[in-house]
Image 1 (cartoon, rainbow, N blue to C red):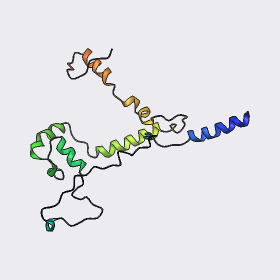
Image 2 (cartoon, one colour; image 1 turned 90 degrees about the horizontal axis):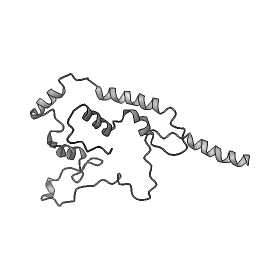
Image 3 (cartoon, rainbow, N blue to C red; image 1 turned 120 degrees about the vertical axis):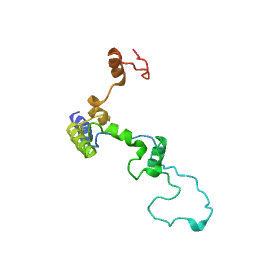
Length: 168
């Protein structure tokens, strides 16, 4: 009896020590991974074969889609201005957004702060018996409860016309 209990507990204990990070995105499905499939534009015959660009192995080709350009277009921008500076039509928006000052290197500072936060929260996350979403656990206090926030604003007298009605 004791030997059986030890044989069961040892693998369980060793499995609980596995550290795979905060976010576990494992699936038990046997189907294809839809994130590995990259859609491409349909192939077309060029009007003039002499005007085709020189092939660049390992680089983008004419049938590759650009997620950045598609995103810029979806938000009403112009993809041809993506590499340049800020267009003059957006000058007022940028000026208003930076009216209280701009912190240089804010992205790197936030990334470092977040890495420290995740490291601190992940100290004891390698000990588990059942698979859990450690990312949601680590950021639980940082998550905004939309319904509670809408109720708070409504009680304060603010109009929330786009907010869905409360489920309570």
